[in-house]
Length: 426
Image 1 (cartoon, rainbow, N blue to C red):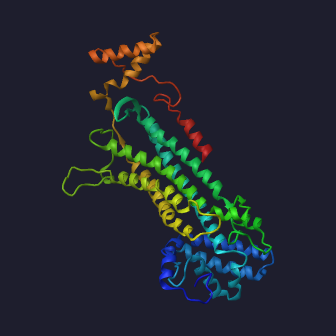
Image 2 (cartoon, rainbow, N blue to C red):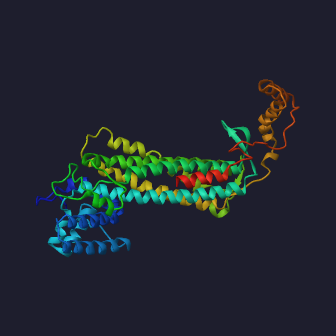
Image 3 (tube, rainbow, N blue to C red):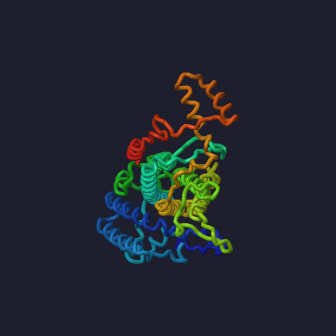
């Protein structure tokens, strides 16, 4: 069954090519297609386009389908083009003429728009929760290890003293930026496109404000052409927000891989969180974090894939939009999985103490030595030269500890302020 079927059979090769894997991908949207149809049916009754009795029949049948979906028993059969045609068929099969009325005053174009908007709203909420959970773990680790020094690097050369408290909370605060982008994406997506029909509105006296409230949207996408143009823009905006989360997570995963190596040896993971080698029995490989890094780097390519799919398309609907789901839907699942696994693995992380006992880190404190001279009245440039000479002739006396007092430094992590910032953003 096809919603556009006119009794003329479609060439099988054309059908196979145009449908592609849409049935599998559309299974993700089944719940949201039902929810959109529930709101639409109630609006049709409110405006007198169907009777209240028909609306009740449709709602009851849709609730039954929703229960099937939530039980994991819903299937899009091969004889149907997509989720929309499968659900409409079930309504017609059960209700007859009343089922045929569900598509009044809407098009498959605004139907799929509603589905995707509702789906993305839910997924943003889930991703935000997973990010917040990881944030809380990182903040706990920062507080627990705030006084354990960690060498800082620039250009992969030993630079200045850092700390595990500084390292963990750096990623925690970075995730707040990602939450901000997810919130901005939600603002763009949380607009009701239903009623835009094929992209040019409807001659029926529909009530779009009613469906906006019924479907839980914050506002209406008023201009019907603008509503249609949100297809592609919504997915691309979501991809950029996900890319931001993935970028933070990928960098964290790279740090973990680096710090786990014997050359750095800053941290440990329990053996059950690592993998081995088929020929080297001593290996404890950080496969979890390598895969997180790889998957997140793949997610970071998604905005460009979606940009190339939609770039320079004129206004109105185009079948190109169908391909957006192929990249977006798996990426959403991949990102959620990466966030969950990062949280799971980092719970077992063990930080090493006494790292600075290694002689190669003795010059990490040169800036602190310079600053002590400056505090005692020596101009910075002169102090810099003095310390440089002492390094060359081996007479530099290394400060025993750090005395960083400004906000966000080793000895003043501002963890409570970071928590407040997250609470304000979340």
